[in-house]
Image 1: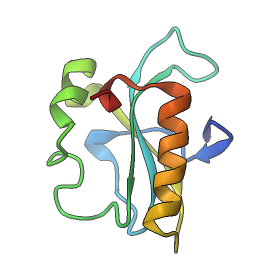
Image 2 (image 1 turned 45 degrees about the vertical axis):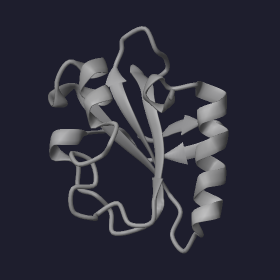
Image 3 (image 1 turned 30 degrees about the vertical axis):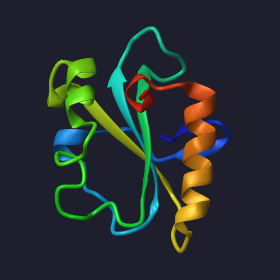
Length: 111
């Protein structure tokens, strides 16, 4: 089952601990389980973009990883969903990322 944010269809959220990063470009969201959210019980805490999500250290080495853990309580409570954008330019991905950050205001995207 997929999940939609701002008109973009993301893959179904997967637990970060077992997530297999795609070897492609796209926009991703970091989520935490939250039963108050519907239709799917996930709260967005971060939007980002990457030219290759399978790069070494992509998530655990991310500069906002500590914010994600602080919001989730543990890595086991983090989920990832991806909006694939193969063959996209960095500018195209950043435009989608910026639109989603502006619309949803995720806590870990705040300065």
